[in-house]
Amino acid sequence: MVTETTQTPVYTISKSDKRFIGWHVFFAVAALTIGSLFGPLQALQQAGIDWYPSLDFLFINIPEGPAAYYQGLTLHGVLNALIWTTFFITGFTTLAVIRGLKRDLAIPIMNRIGFWMMVVGLVVAAIPLLGDSASVLYTFYPPMQADSLFYIGLVLVVVGSWIEGWGFYITLYRWRKENPEEKTPLIVMAVVLNMVMWQIATLGIAAEVLGLILPWTFSLTNGIDPQLSRTFFWFTGHPLVYFWLLPAYASWYTMLPKQAGGKLFSDSLARLAFWLFLILSVPLGFHHQFVDPGVPAGWKFIHSILTLGVFFPSLLTFFTVVASLEYAARQRGGKGLFGWIRALPWGDPSVAAQLLAGILFMFGGISGLANASYNVNLVLHNTTWVPGHFHLTVASAVTLSFFGISYWLVPHITDKPLWRPNLAVASSWVYFAGMLIFSNAMHTVGLLGAPRRTPLGLAPYVPDEWNGHLFRVAVGGAIMWVGLMLFVVVVAVTAWQRKRFADGETVDIPLAESLDDPNNAPAWLDRWKPWLIATAVLIILAYGPQLLDQIFGIELTSPGFDPGSPIPNN
Ligand code: HAS
Ligand code: CU1
Image 1 (cartoon, rainbow, N blue to C red):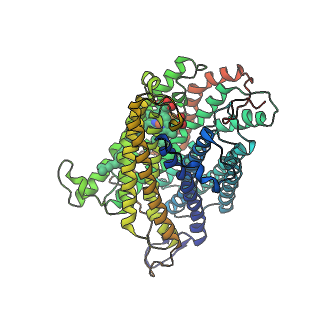
Image 2: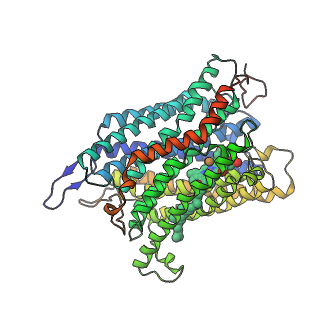
Image 3: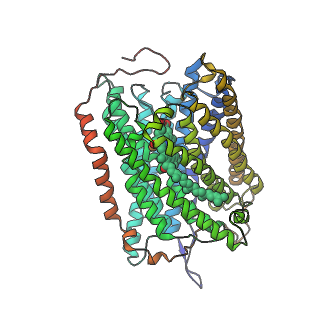
């Protein structure tokens, strides 16, 4: 909605769009709240304290013993890693596109259909999850087999996100037609590129679920090929992590510098980083399959090298974002080699959350480098090191950044001031402190050999030297939960309070200017076609031959297993 004033036209987002974005955030935060309940329960469980069965009244069916752990872990992974992220990202993308282009969505009904399809998918998947017939973890590796409804629900969530994506592409396409001379605003390029990458990436699980899993759960085939399923899964599973990360990067590049009181160091470098993510995010999936016997070593080597390649745009990001922050801090009077860090606006809840996210991500990046190194991976794969790594990435870089974004976004869409900003700052610090303890303990005990995806509190073989670390896992996990609940309370009270902004007062989306003029950025940084072609070519080269080999060698022989019982399903 554009309103003409005496000066320049001002763009305000319509009430109905604000409400629509609000629904995304509502479902995202609700999923995070429920999913995170299992976090401390699992962490305490590692130290031998089993409180999960006491939640019996909340669920349709809580099983006994280790099966209860797997139900909880699946709910934790699906709700936090898949639902919290996807709903928040599509909501944030909607706001970024509308506000970045200063234009309404081209076909609003399309985005609404996509969104409500995601909600239906969530409900459909929740039924078997709560009923303990889908305790297959968020990676749902066959031959573990869940109720068909679980997969159908996930398909609806993914297809819904595609439809929302199409709504964004059409909107951007129309804007480019209307504004042929202008460069796409960086924020819009970043979030739309992320949706395009996601759409290419999810072709993998589409093939896995529609081509292999659903025919198998409907008994149209006698068995499944676990190797091919895993290969399809990781075709999606790796870029999935960048689908989570890029919206956080979009905020670090295009908003955080302004919030910190400065400007983006380089618009061109930022664009380059995003294009590199488009071409490099997908063809790396075998770095999750270094120990898979069915993938030849040469392909693992190629994907290992490409993984080191995708490290590069994150290093670029490190450089550009920290340079922007330093510029801001020095504008604010910051001095010294590192002394400027104190001059950053740490009292702003949105800034504090994102700075703490970035600090934790430095450690997450380092553990990622260890994962990616083929021979080192053989030591840490399937140990608690890996969840240690991904709590520093998706549960820190991404989740804490989304806390930070929520601290201005919720006031923006509700027209209500943030409730208790000091508590909001505290939420991030508490979460940060818990994460430091938790992730350090998970990495360390992983190197000592502790397996991941295992209720160690019930295991008879735990050596004494693990116990101190497992205790730290429990303490860190419990502290993180307190921080997370503070976040939930702050945003919930903000949204539901009666108090509104006084007339004329508002919170706008904080869009940073750049030190270099975006209009001087080279034209090839604003063209989609060459980058899309490069993306397709690289994927075909890095995946094509091995994928064809596995498809032609398909063996639909494995029966399904219910993780709660050792007897095959059929
Ligand atoms: Fe990873 C496994 C390799 C990044 C998530 N990863 C996982 C799994 C998840 C995950 C969920 O190569 C487990 C999957 C499962 O269930 O089995 N990962 C990497 C590499 C990177 C990486 C090389 N991962 C991520 C991100 C994730 C994520 C991001 C989620 C969002 N990962 C692996 C590998 C495995 C793996 C193997 C398989 C392990 C196995 O064996 O199973 C890189 O992209 C990381 C690059 C990051 C950096 C850091 C840059 C730092 C920045 C901070 C700037 C600072 C600021 C603050 C802003 C180079 C940008 C300034 C503050 C001031 C105060 C000044
Ligand atoms: Cu990965």
